[in-house]
Image (cartoon, rainbow over all chains, first blue to last red; front, side, top):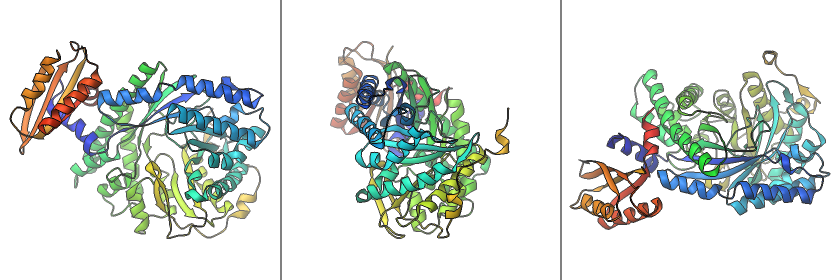
Length: 453
Length: 90
């Protein structure tokens, strides 16, 4: 039988250490909504999402109440829209789909819907290109839609034409949403090796290899890990790693429970649990603070990459045994604007874009929620993207870029998005040019170690 | 069996267990186990309770007990048992 100290431990995590289940994300296939007529297609999309997700939010709230653990977000991911838009004629049609998704999200009460996406690692279809070109308008005209583009993979290399195009699209998206500090870019991410079952925004989409409807759950808990790491100040690496592993196991078990319950109550299969340390701007809910507790003065100091590698790996090891199916991104996220410790490190001059790039080699995802000066050129943004894609491609891992080139802002200014998206200081970007690289056509071939057949 | 864990945390005072137990008895909730400790003047208690006998839905029992807790100045949590089983048992 459970004892008092175990109960107190669990409730301390929830009450004082910001432990939560970050999201229940329902993945919904839209492949059966394809139609040559845009109005008919939007109608089918609406019918399908409203039918499948009608009980999602209420079920999430019920589970949170039953177990006394907060479930912060209820979200939806859909089939990459470019895959269902082969018959669409112009960017306006895509914007119309984005608006339909936005309205559905509002009606079922989810805060984000992901999947305004294209997968173009080896090349773009006309549909992919139309979708990409419609992103600035789509993110300007909607509130809850998230967009992602997979530009590269270990198996296929890097589509540099798409990298060039995305540099321009990110610039344009920032300019279109300049009145909101470039908020559109906070909902737009580019990937290398994007997973099909990621429940976290902005990069969630419902992969084509998935069942029709699926429940994925993302757990979090940097505050819980921080508190556990504080208990082993001065201890050796063995004790430190064991502590992180044990904590990751415990928090992932709750994710597994919530995922199974949500799947049972909603009547759709359980996909995966994503065991990621996802920070929030709340004090004490920071991945940077864990790195500091491990032993660096600020995130970005020498040793930070090693500390992060250790953290990321132990989180995976602890979590893997705790869930029957682990997937998504699983590891530690290092967004700047969503993590008060990261923001402090940037303001203190400890953390640079280049150090963040190094850190992305050893943790899940990549350059995330980083605000850069508004006069950063499209080719420079493409260059930063290309570097990050290369890291993912060569190291056979998921990497991503979510940059906000905030129009009219310069180093020393700040952008504010509010809520979970937080606020960020504008970070300096290397001022040397890479436009001759970006102007080259075609793609970078897949690396030699991708040929395993 | 619908097992829930009720935890009560707060400044120690007379009649905390009595108040909670009275509510449970009036609503046909069967107490399976109780343990408590007082550390630094703070009262910590947990009860394992079976809700099979009560007609009230879980959410209502939880809200009622939270109100009882507010009246005597302690914090009451009511959670289904599985969250603790899952987290602490392999």
